[in-house]
Length: 154
Image (tube, rainbow, N blue to C red; front, side, top):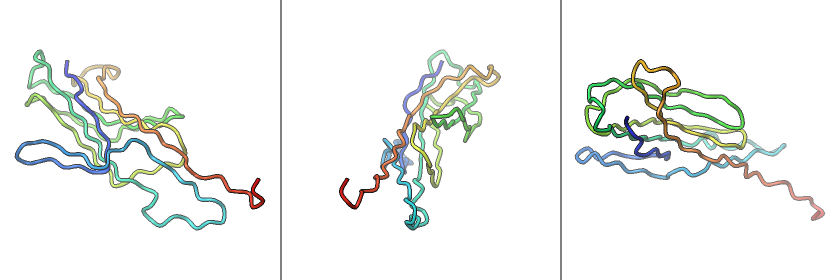
């Protein structure tokens, strides 16, 4: 069975064309949301979203056949709640020993605190739906809106 190598969420990244090595910029550990208070103007357009680049790598085991077809998915989950969104999927083979998947979104926004989980998963094509091998990257979404200060100092 293949094994996960890594999954990284960042704002951007690049791949060297000659070596195939990747670099990640502004790795995301947490998101912060600032709720607008009543009577305040909304934030400027574009200030509500953050670019998201997800990179996941998998390595074929010695027992895996290079021509075997595999399914892959990128899945987003947000808790609290049980909503699961498949945001990208397809098929591939391990023609090389390692396979890297990249998902780029121009922006992502959140309205409430919780945990945003990005999952990369694979399975042999034709296997039952529950047979995924997965790796995940949980990101805390924190509400950092400051409580109003009472004018009397209370």
